[in-house]
Image (cartoon, rainbow, N blue to C red; front, side):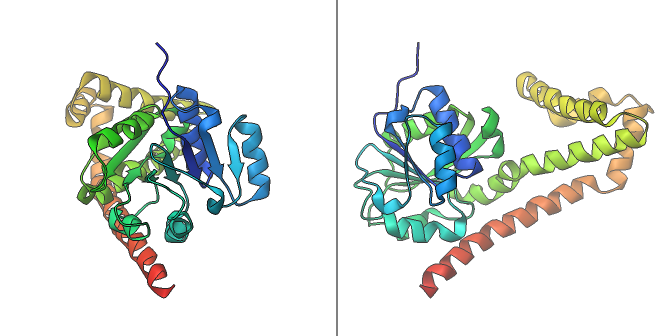
Length: 283
């Protein structure tokens, strides 16, 4: 049975890589009707591209051209430093629409503070695998969002991958793990590929081996429910090639390096929120 369309309009403010990837997924799923979708994009050349990419979707230049209402969803997909400015332009034009922000580091309090009192907001951190329908999205609803209002937003993000509804206190760590995670894995794939080439493998083959092994391992862990440490043990025969390889990775401090990376990303998430607050104060 075909999925039921969302009842209201969906407006995407900022159609960069993530904003356009999310809209593409929503449209492909059938949950969003192109005639009920709107993109707000300031750059004229980019608007022309979007009109070709998304037939039937309305493209606008400015947030002030929007007129939304109850049942509509407004997706904020602009850079964190411009969120408060954009919300200031939108606040009198939302008419009860639900605001969904994917801006990293911007808290629910900051979102609500830039809007009219009682506005409904949801903070979401998706990741770039949304481009292929394999996103991991973390959702945190604000105080004014009911379970009924949250449900269609969860359904939208489920159409481009998996979702978790979490308290806002977990957003920084979750963002540092899944939001930034694709870059970590890409770095690992690059390192493995280069190591393969250094040992005589052709570049294309080394890359295919690295990427497919990562994909297969992820599916194995996800579908089998096997613990990651159990998988390491299963692959590592005593004294074998994997065992000596793991020993070298441990000696190099791989676990500590990832811990330091996630800690730094968490700290940066808080800094992004502070920068946004500073910009608002200076205005």
